Image (cartoon, rainbow, N blue to C red; front, top):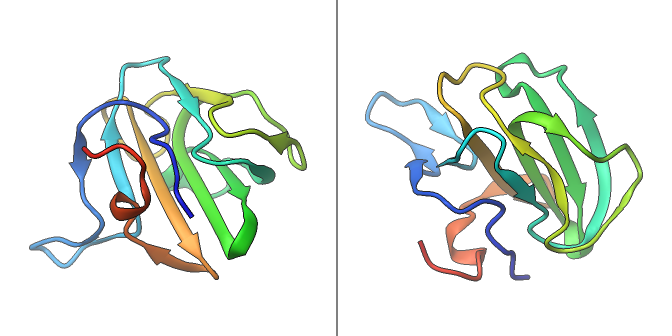
Amino acid sequence: MRFEWPVSGRIISRFGSDESGARNDGINIAAKFGEPIHAAASGSVLYVGSELASYGNLILIKHTDGYVTAYAHAERILVDLGDPITKGQVIGYAGKTGDVTSPQLHFEIRHDAKPVDPRPLLVASH
């Protein structure tokens, strides 16, 4: 499955473990505050909320073939649980909620609940 970039910006934190041993299950992309967040693929909203404090405002979208995408640190969310989503649809706006200090989007792709590096699955190269 191929996914579109949810925001345009440089990657500020890559997938996997860093030198300190901290693990990132996705990528963090620098964004302008209030920049639209686009759904990377069509699907349906699986979760909307802020119960995972470090992620701030979080959206999960379920896709076909066992894929789920996650969009964290949103300033504002435009979708509700169960909403059908089309690829490219604006689902929220970038912010700095959770444990981040600058506007960005934490983006994950999971396949059968396992985190995978999003970069090879994204259509445009970064």
